[in-house]
Length: 417
Image 1 (cartoon, rainbow, N blue to C red):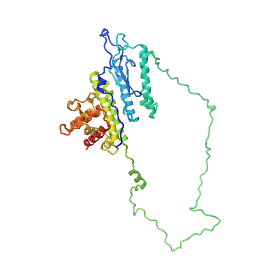
Image 2: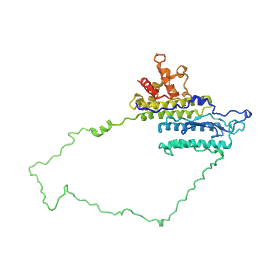
Image 3: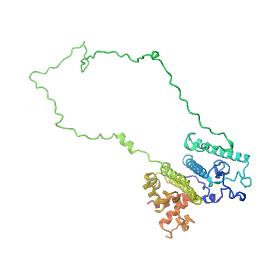
Image 4: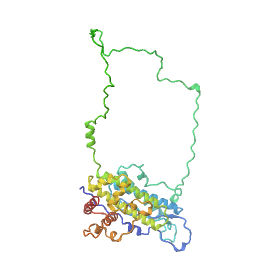
């Protein structure tokens, strides 16, 4: 089995969500309607492998506008994370952390989060520096500057530019140029071929070249010889059959290369990553912040699980049972059947939720508290479905080491038998 590099654990989603990522309320303005909304961002820096706390880089006039911008930025960030792991093979790359939309207290002088103009400009410059670092890494991996992932790092600015930037005015209406008028007298007829009427003629050509310098012997049949009779082609029809394939074509079909383990992993993981992005987009219309926070936590766990599952597929090899099942699951029913065999028959409704809130898994304390212990149990204390749930939680909450990956490959192979 090909050795895989050690992967670093993604930032614990529970601890990230436990952080406020919101502005503290100020008592002297309680009851006053909010005028500006924003959300906090912890941007991941690929150069230092740390996070930059930014609270003054976005401002919105309404809660709805803030929520839409937040969900769009989360989706673009997930696309960057998936690209870095799939194209750049940077399994240590972590997603950004986003707080909920709330009233912006950075403009209130009595708030501990108040920012002066210089502090706000410094945060904007820091955000641009982080985006520049990410853009360099993407371009180093042969991504073009006009690709959706690279262009998503710098979205188009809104009409209320930050820090009194340049106003965006509508473009002037296009002026239709008047068509040039030409006089008929200036036009001249042009001919590329001279069309001449020629009389049709015919000529009798011999079947073979006849030289005038050599005598030609002509065989004449005697008068008593019978005239030849044309054969009846309808008397014995030739059966129609498809031509046999050439030996070279048969050899080419037999020598078709098998997809690699990386291709097998990408065939499954890329579709499931897009599914999570759709769930995050759908959760943007919800008003219950507690439910949205749980949805975000479940989606971040799913991203971690997909990253670990990709590593297991690549490490197990192209001919393994896991890689074969992953690249063979094309239809939705096949994909959900594979999920049920891996993570339990009750997992498909949460894996492919009809509603964004369905992605949240119901708690199972006996299994979720120590999933590795459940998987390693040999005393039949836990059922097969509980062990499959433990596999999901282990891949979603931890980063297995190389030794654990070897052991998990055996566990997965057992579940797929």
